[in-house]
Length: 112
Image (cartoon, rainbow, N blue to C red; front, side, top):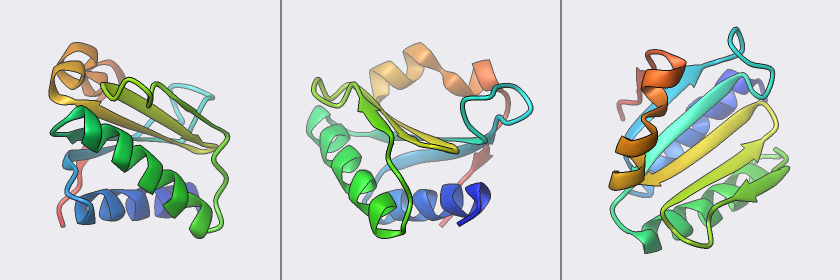
């Protein structure tokens, strides 16, 4: 699956799982770590952890590879490294603090 297709697929999956404020940002022209960032918000620490686990399972089910997961234990922020796509799941406070959209440029809001 191409990076853009994977990023869009993850956005749709996150929407189905009730994540909020889902954004996809193309970053390949700014960094070598990934082609896309997918950023989403969760309403609680429990939802951050649950979404992280569900996205990991989904990526693997789709034939993708999850290289690593960071930050999920605390439930405030998690990043899933799916090779060409980095998935960031934040609680509201951490999303506002890190504000990745401001750092990496305008993203495309995912609309279901």
